[in-house]
Length: 102
Figure 1 (cartoon, rainbow, N blue to C red):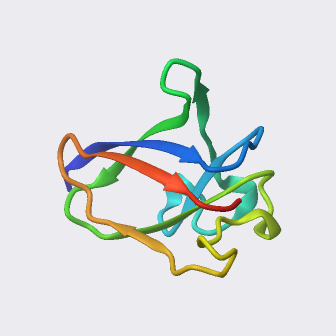
Figure 2 (figure 1 turned 90 degrees about the vertical axis):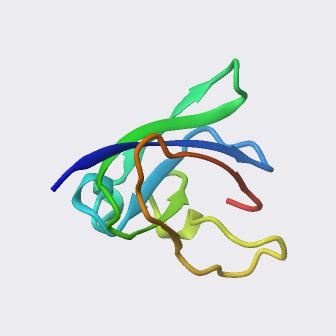
């Protein structure tokens, strides 16, 4: 199975000190908050960034959390629960995302 690098560039609408990527695959924790992947803050981009390898063309579900706890999972514009995000990894995929509430 071919693996491809996916870049996540995430800008929360509200300040947060830490941001983690969590999801359905082993390399992003398999929904276990203690195994979520910490993102780094890039001051030039004014965003949190992480690069991850995924199996090409195999759908991945994911979300963003802060503080490695589910009570700090991302929310929608009205602070409502939202569905899991889904991506299908392809070579060179770069996601520029905004988080409404975290």
